[in-house]
Each structure stands twice: as C-alpha cells, then as structure tokens.
Image (cartoon, rainbow, N blue to C red; front, side, top):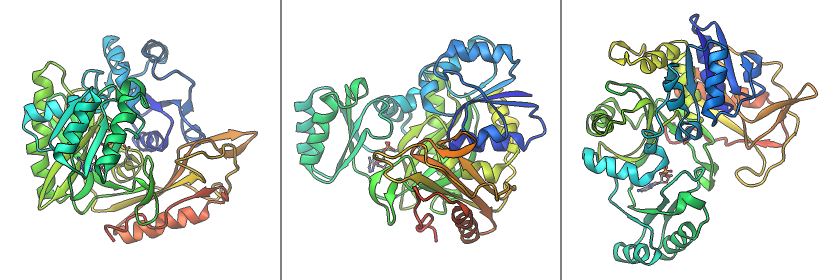
Length: 420
Ligand code: AMP
Ligand code: GLY
C-alpha cells in the first residue's frame, strides 16, 4: 500500500512508526512531517488544509490510504475532497468534524442521543450569558463554541472570572470561534480519554489513556496541549468503558448517521468519571497528542489494519489484539512553553538511541538545520516506552528522557502520578 499521513507532530510520528511496523505498507509519505519522521518516511511540503492540493498529490503518487492527523484539515473538509475523488481516507467529513469544531453542536447531539454530559446553555448575547452565570453560580465553565487552539475553555472558580471570560470571548478574543459561548455545569470526578474507531455504523474501542494538561508538576500552572500520557487509564475500567460505549458513543454515532452525516474516523471522547459512570466532557475528531503516541506503541503494526478497516467500512470484522501491557510518554518542551519560547536550539543525545518495539523517542517540533537536530516548536520530543507494568514503562520513558541532551528543554518528572 502507498500511504499518506497528514500532520507533523508527535501524533503523526507515532502513526508513521506504527504504519511502518506493518509489512502491508510499501511507501509512506507524511506532509509536512518533522525531522524524526524524515528518518523513516518521505516528508513532503503540502498545504494540508488545501483539499485540492492533497487530492492532486494523492492521485499523482497512487496513494491507497490517507490518514488525517490534526483537526484543522478535517474541519476544512479535506476528507470530503478525498472521498469525492474516490481516495480512501481515515477521518470524518467536515460535517461530522463539527463534533470537535462546535461545542454547541456536540451538546445538541448529546441531547438528541440522550448521552450523559454537563447541563448547558448557549449565548451570543453577553448580558444574557452573565444573567445565566449569576443564576447558576460558580464554579461554572465557559467555552468558546469554535476551535480556539485549546484555549477556548475557562473553568471559572467564581462568577467574576466567568463573566470576564464571556466578555473576552464574545468581545472577539478568538474571532469567529468565540461568536457564541457555551456555558456548562461544572462536573467533578477524574478525567480520562477513550478512543473508539467508527466506520459510520460500527464502533471498536482501541484504548484508554490519561493526559497531563498542566505545564507544571502536581498539575499546576498553565494549560498545554499535553505534557505526557499513559495507557491504559486504570480509572476507565472495562465496565465503565462498556457502559460509555452503550450510553454515549453508540447513541452519538447513531444520531450522526440519522442526520445523514455518518461519523468515520477515530472518535476521542474526553470523559469525566465519578461513582462508576462516565459523562462526556468533549469530543475530538482525531487522536489525542500525546495520547496517540502511547496507543500506537501498544498497538504496533495492527494499528494500520484497524485504521484501514475503519476507512473501508469493515470495522464489524475487525478485532484488537490486546497486549496486557502499559505505555507512557513524557513530553520534552522548549523552556517558556506554553508561553513564548526560543526556536532553533540544538538537541543532542538522540544518535545514541535506536528505536525498538518498546522504546521510541517520537519527534514533534523538530527540524534539521545544517545537519543539526533543532527544536522548532513548543512541544518537541516524546520519550515513549512500554512494559509489563506502568512503573517499568515510566522508568524506561524517563531513561529515554535522561539520554536527551537539550539544556533549553524541560519536562515534568511526575507523569503517571495519579495511576502510580
Ligand atoms: P475541553 O476543551 O472541552 O476538553 O475542556 C478543557 C478542559 O476543561 C477539560 O479537559 C476539563 O478538564 C475542563 N472542563 C471542560 N468542561 C468541563 C465541565 N463541564 N466540568 C468540569 N471541567 C470541565
Ligand atoms: N492531548 C489533548 C489533545 O490532544 O486534545
């Protein structure tokens, strides 16, 4: 098979790595990729949000399967363009991607599907939104309706913070994405991520994970894209996961199909777990980053078979071959992230590492400058390992971290603290 992966982060490096573990893959292109991906696949510079450009490239290279990593090309309708050109693609249509690109839409789907989630109301008028906040009290959660690069959610401890968030969002801080706000009941419990493949009709759970969103140890400081993750998430027991499939995932997929916008791709459900049951926090229409890295290390080459079965509408006959193991990834980020950080700093120590099926350093924001490996983004490397126990996976992941020579980088020492 000739395969094209869209994206250039740690998520896409792990997708590329798993794809290449499968002998089915003959040629692998990644657009735009990064310095780590360039060591294992052919990187191409393509505007991945330009459907016409992606279709042209896929036709010219006789691509059999396109795997879309990030949400932006999905929201832009690149999967629709590929399907219209009869090219097999893993990823939802723009209409189905609204499960991530519109918070209000997701709430409406949950209401129609009777899926448990936080109570909500949506507003375009600031005074009405503030009256709602005062009537319900704090803590309360204010969300920009649209995609806001992970910054559009304010969990407000008091009414003043919530009202300020409303002014910010409706005042244009996030442009069109904040033209409407969703105000939600504050849920308590423990959060976990649940990953399910959907082919429009059938669903197949492929793993659970827990992310670490805060920049600082002990879950302190600013929110990031994620500083580390592990899989499986012990809080998401089989019983809770099965119930989430029946109560949340299947009704959502059925409602999307009923509306004529079937969901195809990976559905990433952020769940809040309390008293043995899960409620939906949010959907994402893609793999999580860095959650994908731990899932791919655990799944290995079968990930491609599962993704292909999903893209071809054959999930009903697919099965996951679970290994009874644990994986952890630790993110190395540029000092200053998620605020301002320096680019172009040199990274050493990776030459001594060779990837194995149990330990891989996935690259995120890296590039080569005059042959040197350099940091080129906020999140830069993902030291990822798997083992029979989470403790051993953690020790192996931190061994990898310690092998990296990058004085301008930092990481959290406490990934996995909740489960350990
Ligand atoms: P989201 O982008 O919707 O996942 O929100 C980002 C984070 O805000 C989530 O991972 C939760 O930690 C928190 N959050 C979002 N909605 C709620 C809610 N209704 N109750 C409590 N926490 C929430
Ligand atoms: N790690 C969180 C996300 O990918 O949305």
